[in-house]
Length: 259
View 1 (cartoon, rainbow, N blue to C red):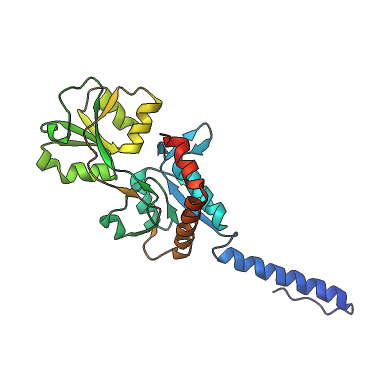
View 2: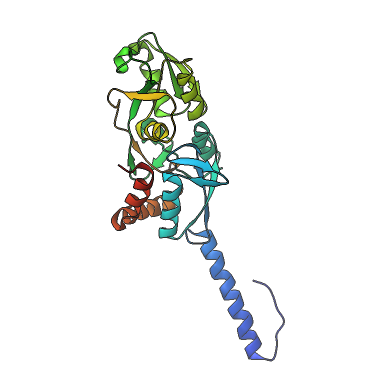
């Protein structure tokens, strides 16, 4: 607290003390999980309908959801777009506080991050070129080249099952490049989260189609580095529950994935 000279007017003293008290209160808010705290949130904006850039604005389920949670719970966020594969390393380097990027909750990821309650049921699916009539399920991929996106559960599934399925795995940094590889005929199939590819195909004729059943039952979660930022993780879970209760969650989901 600043030192100041004694004055004869008690009113002036009261004003100075009141100002100092106000400054201390503001400092406490900034250091806590309240309105003064700004959390850096990692997102991957090449992942519609969850995250994408339209003009100079970020849109998508994840973007609207984390903004709504922050507003509901009274904290502030700053979005940090980056490649999906770099999000967890950025959290480990203390460059991010939170991640929301269509991130599937897996045991492997749980070793380094703590997840919120699930906010979306996803699941992987196989996608081929629209005029491909030979590949009808994952069992028809033997001897084929399969495109995946680096760092995703689709990539892990393909790598873990490469020998069993008899496939060659090719990795890409972003979803559009992966889609293009299959539509151009340079890869035979791709493995992607069902809602992502379903949305992409519905929005634009990519020359692709979904085949077979979903390969798993992935659930998406919002992440913080393991053991850190537990205050905001609690707020995220509370906010998510309240948004589901008041209908905001359904409104956001249905605006992108309306049935």
